Length: 154
Image (cartoon, rainbow, N blue to C red):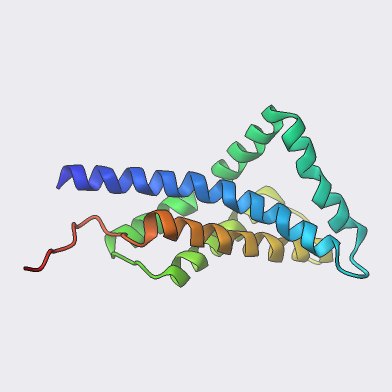
């Protein structure tokens, strides 16, 4: 039993770390797609090319990754514990958790004017990336959620 719980904890941790990375990649992809739309604000184009700096300067990339983990870690821990204790294995629920965690992390990192339209656009884009991250988390750790080992029939 202890070995199974330790395995679940490692799966949750691995799922979270990989989901954060995929979520950041999804964020860049969404900004790139939006910047190619007709009449897109130049702001989207600027956001499309900022990841180049992260690739050119690896310490900056590690800082962004670490900052994302710090901003979303506590919320993710709460949702992961809920999913594990109640054996919640639904992909849409994990996607919803990912979107909520991404939105909460964004609100923690970007205090600002609530009436700024760019802030609302960014929030929507970040929630979409969180949905992708939640799905990736489900693929890695959420499908088998539950601290109790499944009963084998037969």
